[in-house]
Image (tube, rainbow, N blue to C red; front, side):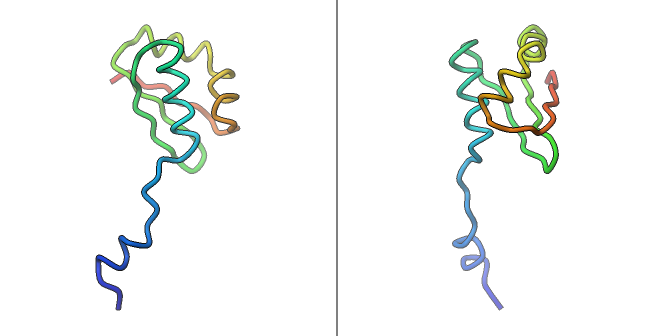
Amino acid sequence: MDGIADILSKKNFDTPPEVRAIKDFVHRQYKHDVQVTLQPRSIVIAAHSAALIGTLRLNAPALQKAAQTEKKLIFRIQ
């Protein structure tokens, strides 16, 4: 039976490329940070600013293109 150290040493802790692409896009365009959660069929983007989330909703196709994904984007205000 594997110990916890063996299991964790095999796990990949890198940020998925879709998450990194979305965070970079938002930071580059709007100078804000967002939280991005990757789910099997969707990507959840959360921010504290309702105005930012509203703007990101309008630019959802550009975000999908930047992330090179067809997953559904879900926007949340924190």
